[in-house]
Amino acid sequence: MLKRLHDTAGQDTALALSQVDSLAPFTYGLEYSAPARGGWTIVHIGMLLPESHQVFVCAQSCLRGVVLSAAELGDSSRFSTISVDEDSVLEGNCEEIIIEGVTHILEGLPALPKALLLFTSCIHHFLGTDMKIVFGELNTRFPQVGFVQCWMNPIMRKTKMPPDPFMRKQLYSLLKPADMFTKQVNVIGNNLALRKSSELYNILRKNGFNIKDICTCRDFREYETMASSKLNMVTNPLGRPAAKELCGRLGQEWVYLPVSYDWEQIREHWKCLSDLLELDFDSIWKEVEMDQLWQKAETALETLAGELAGWSVAIDYTASSRPFGMAKLLVKCGFRVERIYADTISPEEEDTFAWLKKQCPRMLLCPTVYHKMAVLPRTWCRETGGKVLAIGQKAAYFTGTSHFVNMVEDGGLYGYGGILELAAMMEEAAGEEKDTEKLIQVKGWGCCC
Image (tube, rainbow, N blue to C red):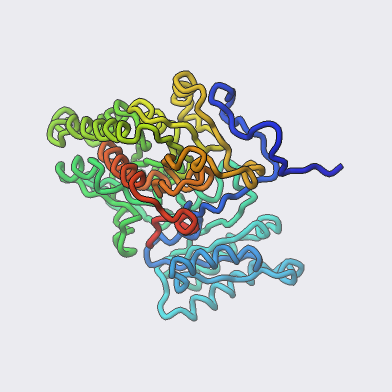
């Protein structure tokens, strides 16, 4: 019997927090992809590796998306493709096709790249393509090029190592053992560099430390200096596999200090970092004037909450890896947060969610990929008189607002300074309307590799 999938009658898709009883409260089958395209793809992440060239090996239908991503960036010169057709599958010569295809591409470039990111796809996993043979031959033919194995494999999207964290890990695979420099720290696993508003820069530079980040490396030589860092600092959960791999391979220590919107937790993070770097935390706290920065950020949010009395706030998971933490902070500062768009709840935010559930039981948790989201009205902003402030592209799209903070992956905000800048971004978003439809169609927001 046929079933009407998009019937909007009956049970609502959103859940009040009081109704949520698990970290994965929604049931899925057919999924919807909202036209909010600011999140980074593997093409954008790969572009972070300086002086590199990307080669995608897959069927023509799969190539369309990645080709358009490279074209939008204006980086088609750093991008090539090898098409897999039916004959190559039937004849079983995928290894030869990849080797000869990459050879042809490299010989046709004006100059050899320092690195080549080779993306294989689902079909190569199904066929059991021997990539050891492929990379062994390519390394023999082009010893001056660093080859990086990458995946464009959506069938692994919900496995323990999806393509995104695997891609972030592989970015650092060309780093080689080097003498450690105790006064150098890497920030790894991010797609966006931490913004200069973060007090991290003052803490490290005032104590004689260099900060390295692949997002700011201008050339391959600078990228290679990341191998000399004593400590790798991870602020995004998807960067942890990279840190673990570098610890095992290069012996670099690492610490996970995720983006936080909790005042005390931020203080604990700076205490942890100070201890690892053998710095006097109390002296740093006074020298960088942390108390004043904390107070300034808190006052800015509380003042803005008063100015935006009568406004509703919606947050989505693409804007922050800590959407519930952000919501808790804003609620405590006086904002009326009414909706969070997220399909699951990270175990790292379980306690934060429990707090919100108790304090804001009527706040709605809304899915983003549930198929009915394709047809449900996106008129909440209009129904509330236009006073909806969204943080994140999906929140802006689903609520229908033109007042939104356009950022992905926390936008590089970090620490007390990051929260202070968030307050300024929210104030600007409330005061100026944006062309939502135009802005959210830009792929890989913030990517200018």
